[in-house]
Amino acid sequence: MSFEVKKISADGTKFAYMKFGSGKTPLVIIPGLSLQSVIPAAEAIEKHYQVLTEEFCVYLFDSPVAPGEGYNIDRYAADIYAAIKKLGLESICLFGVSQGGMVAQTVTVSHPELVAGLALGSTACRMDPDRHEAVDTWTALARQGKCEELYLAFGERVYPPETFESFKQAFSQAAKTVTEADLKRFVILGNGSAGFDVSDKLSRIGCPVLVIGDTDDRVLGAEASYEIKEKIKDARLYMYEGYGHAAYDTAPDYAERLYSFFKSINNTVR
Image (cartoon, rainbow, N blue to C red; front, side, top):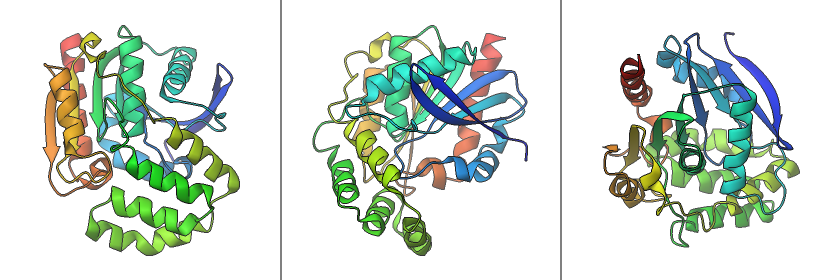
């Protein structure tokens, strides 16, 4: 095992995070909304991002341990920023997916001096009611305690059909391990992205930006990625086809694409 799992408290909010890689450049990853902690999958996560480990020291943050009612993207971003500063990280590469991409955009807009390069996967710069429909469906199931229905509804929207079918039984089994605390956190974090909007602030971002989406995103829609590209004129855009919202998990060359982008930034800085 070459990764470390640690905990940190910043401005009263607790996070678990995993650290791996031997590179000198810090790369912070903020995952998307999930029903349960991603930390138990730390070994698989490290393997997934193995290509990054020589060039970068990776810090992957789990969702806040116990967010309070009303916790939103602005507070999430402020807490992540506080955690990053507490760790002593500077001039970071930052990668956020889905809800984590919203947090990453907010951090970069608020603290442009911190971020040397930004990658955004399957995310949006604003959440209107239509874009929030999937999350609203999931949080309604969570409030009702329908864990298996929630896991299946989540998987069906996030993954392409063939991947969902192959994981369907695993989702049903995982649902049996969901706790009341998991459901409460999921609802709070899900509700926290409603009304999110940094679309009029993206022009403040001056660092290199890579936007990665998928034409078959059935959570936020492909247009969400195109909109970010439109707002950040110099951003690079790459659109997958057929890998779904979770292209960051399902596209076989995704980590290599991130590596090429962040490596180019490292070479420029040097």
